Image (cartoon, rainbow, N blue to C red; front, top):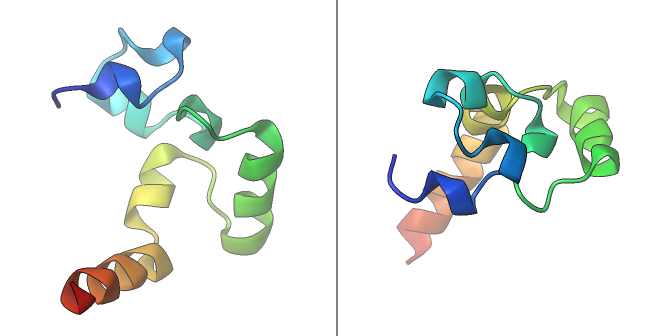
Length: 68
């Protein structure tokens, strides 16, 4: 995935894409530990993969695309 370095924290820049997918969501730039806890509490999201495959987020993304 091109440009991954500007989307993850420095510690994750050189990691394999599968490692990043299974990383805690706070591995994403701009996501704090508090944000991660809110995602876990609200949607049981623990990893970047969980966030990217969450049905509510996918639904919202689809609706936003259709609205363009």
